[in-house]
Length: 100
Image (tube, rainbow, N blue to C red; front, side):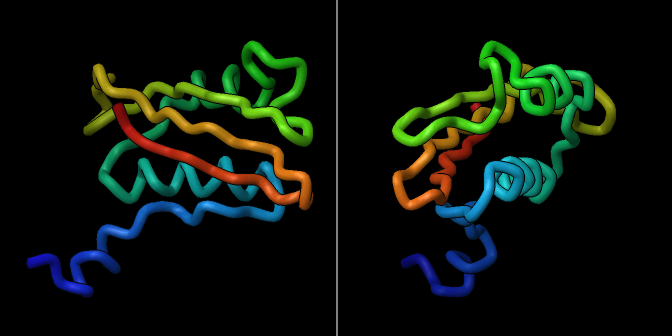
């Protein structure tokens, strides 16, 4: 049986955010909380500069997906941090984040 304590300790990142920056930082904290380091070059090219999008922040009704390399003990991993941010009509942003 799953205890409430284990659910709280393994909490996933918050889903709704007031800004794109808040959502992206929550995705970063999600990976770092699981013992991974973010590949800063990937973060800069994908998230900061928008990657394949003209801008990182999605418009209302759009979803932008980012895949960023991760490191463990300074060594690149096959896994990657993947997160999607959806621009909601309310002006908030919905975050879905996982490591694949």
